Length: 329
Image (cartoon, rainbow, N blue to C red; front, side, top):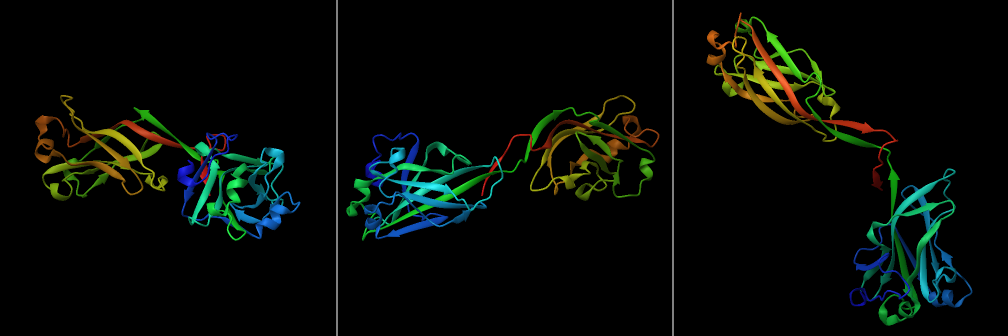
């Protein structure tokens, strides 16, 4: 560790709880520069605070103990803390969860020593705890040694980077539904051979919390015109999908054999979305086979088309009582 960043972890400090590393980028949110540092460290001032700065809709300060916070095992070290400013007016019982980093600029290396809690630990500010940070930020023997680069020409620079974790109270529950209720829908199409429309749509049916329909091209669609029957499962309420959300479904499309029960069917699957509203088969079955009376698919000039949904995903929004998603701002 010492060879990598030029800092030796104090013997009394738990290395598993705090990590130190060097980086080129300056602190994203605040820089606190102190000139004539020796005058401060030689005075009777126990600590000094920066002015307020705002991050994540809250006001903060940096608090520096130039000779260490002796009340918190900081003797012989620089102690640096993030302070929840009194300028905030949070409600009774408030708490703010924060993931933060504190910095010391190494002027020789032109890099920033970064000090943070290990393993993504989140600190909680509340009414009884408005000051959190590091008692043993740096040993004074190291900090005061100009050759180490942290205090040069009696000048030093500290900094802070703060990520406030706000609870959105929003989320979703994804469930997998097998054989949804009313997932089989049969559509009887009379006077089939007399249909002049390019395509026909069935009435709506509901399954798995969504509205569906069947779409048939009696004489075929696109390249299959005059050759094949084209059938699609159509999602009627696709407008409920937003922000890239999809709904996966596995289903069978079927033309029923009304004489021998040897139905003609093909399976399909699709990630339905706002932009993908239907899915099926362009060349579902040949028109010759469909229109042959002995095959049993066209009886009394009626065709029975069926959709059967086997499996689908269902998404429900979670209310504030459900699991919480943390968003860094």
